[in-house]
Image (cartoon, rainbow, N blue to C red; front, side, top):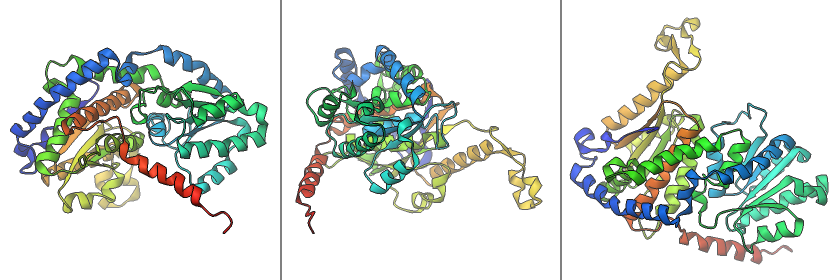
Length: 436
């Protein structure tokens, strides 16, 4: 396996009465068998298309000419979309760029996932539209925020390069059929790619939605899918739930919720390149499981930063949380901390240590402190961070979410409660008085 999944500090025998007893855990783990049967059947009959993506290669080959064009013609790529149309791509691309810009001559990517007018004014003041490409992503083809973003951007492109040349700057990803984005694309002769109708946005990271931005960033899509495939195959071929890491993770999360009242789940990576992973997981877990009065609330944290903003609450606040740490072996890596040069004896503990040593010690200290306070924690350990390992982690959490949904008896693939907000948005827009 590409990662180690250490769960022992979720159990009462290690952390005390806020941990699980083995009988409760075993009962929930046994119930995951039906979820695994469902996943195997869905894989075999392709009723969950995202399960077929890890083995696919032909769609990747069809993306390569688009990637080549973008890398040759543009200095900047703007990715328009929100929710699952954006967070998967952001998570992948963070592996190549944590905010300082690309290193290999790739275009700089900006994911615009909101409709804050100030953001757009700032964006247009800082980019050269003649050297900027736009990828517009909406599964339905009718997401109000994305449509508004696109109309504003298309108008700006038209004014800069003219309507005829504007088509060279735009690519739309939407599901086939009659929808606003498809109609605009047809009327303007804009390039389009199909968003698979059977793959919801929060499960689309391994499709063109996530992989196209990743490829433009210089990442290897084959390796991303290969890592995901290793986790999927392991789950499909497992002889029992005990052998399936996503099943054990789901059983722990749900049994802590049901038996111990653990209603919040904190995901805390100790790597800046995984910061956006927390955003992606937040949507995946919340939107898939928060239904019919059930579900646990995901919280995004980042080590070491949030040791200084959230840890007080975690240690001395309500004891209603479980913690998932994503850790990387970084000891003896990074620049040395030459504390002796400061002539301050109080800093001797830093001398001859590296940045990686400090990060390694901090993550160990945080996990040990939480466990000593009786907090249930589990740890994902990886030796390095690359495309294959990131793909594996993404698939683990997608499978864990699907299995947890079965334990909670909810449908992980819909989101019925959010439709009311969409309806009211349209109503309130139509009621605005532009004369006042």
